[in-house]
Length: 151
Image (cartoon, rainbow, N blue to C red; front, side, top):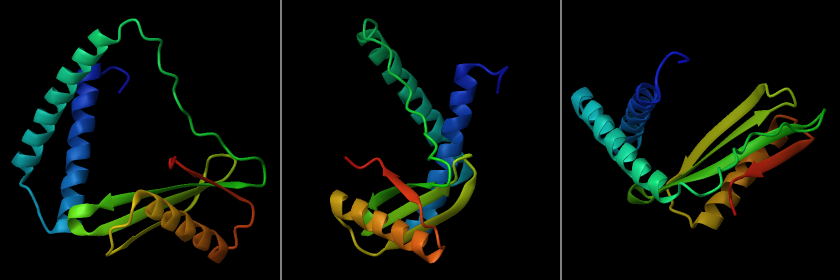
């Protein structure tokens, strides 16, 4: 990717995201689009994103740059578990995922689950955290720092 321009990398990323979205739509909703439909959707979404981004960048030229948020490793001897919930209201499902990493950033374990119930944001995030804590306990992980994007 070092020799590719911003637009090419963005188009590839949007195509990969569209393929992933199509896969999830098939799994969760039994709805599958053709490769041509996926490609067209990715192309259209990329063009919309670029148009909005150009408008927003013109509106915010004097704004200070946004700082990048980076993953911070846990202390030595600890694991960090990043956990999140996802909500599929139309399908009536709530899903969660969690990743455990050591202080070197190495992946140690992961978990995904879903339930046929739509929860509120707070309930879903709490349920996801509970599932991650249960997974840590079942794997014998003792010193775990849990992190979520939940406000």
